[in-house]
Image (cartoon, rainbow, N blue to C red; front, side):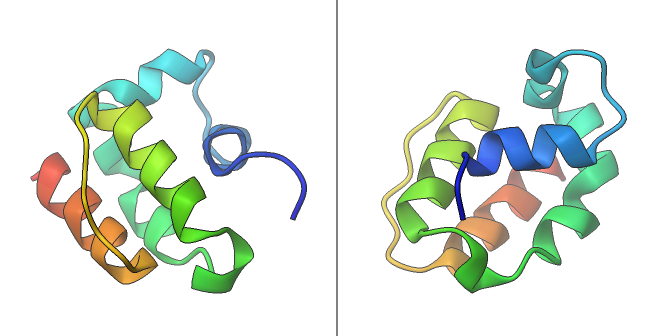
Length: 76
């Protein structure tokens, strides 16, 4: 897919600013939709970049499933 996962999530959200998604409270509103994105739609690298953008922290994983789980844990 062309474009970034970050942009894709933003376009699917109802937020006015991309940076709003960096809030745990706001991202939690969309976590179910994020988890429903097909794993194959974006590379694991794209998922890692999205995680790092939204959370402001690094992650060392090898699968999309691990990134999705880490995002879910971050918004809790």
